[in-house]
Image 1 (tube, rainbow, N blue to C red):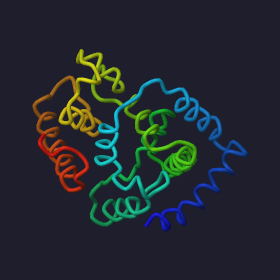
Image 2: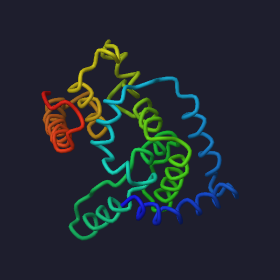
Image 3: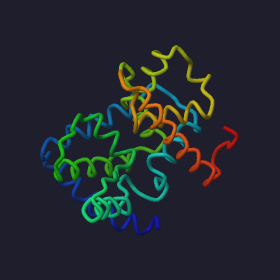
Image 4: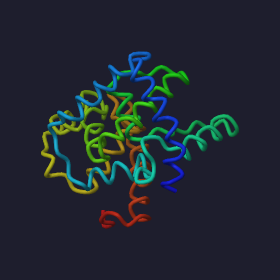
Length: 209
């Protein structure tokens, strides 16, 4: 599978290099912005929360190179055939989206995001990219990134147990709102359960949660 992902990713890498060389749509500027952030990352996270993150959001990360072609095809099928929206963004793509502040719903923006994801995945490993994403992702009102969450909740990173780490990762899909917290709590309960099921399936982490 890894060979297939590599084969299908090469054209994206080459196109990304072309965009970088000519700085098309300021891609080189955003690539440098991503690299500077990753190189100067000043937070270290334990392997457990990173593993929870990738199991929940990007479980084929060991096979792909920044973009998940299988997830892309599945998302296209569900969106256009079954009329059910499904995401296909990898952790690298989600990091790029937040760090560049580009959220417009266009195919070009998506392509641009994929090119950057492939380029930074070539330069940095999954743990660094995952750590960076958790450090800037929106987790709820007044909680930008894991640091903001810990500060708001007045707890230390080392005090988090496995279940609390799962709940933090669940916030990526369902950030804590200011109102309607009952509905949010129900969604979070389902999301936490789904992630726990993945952990049991892959037997990567403690199951006595």
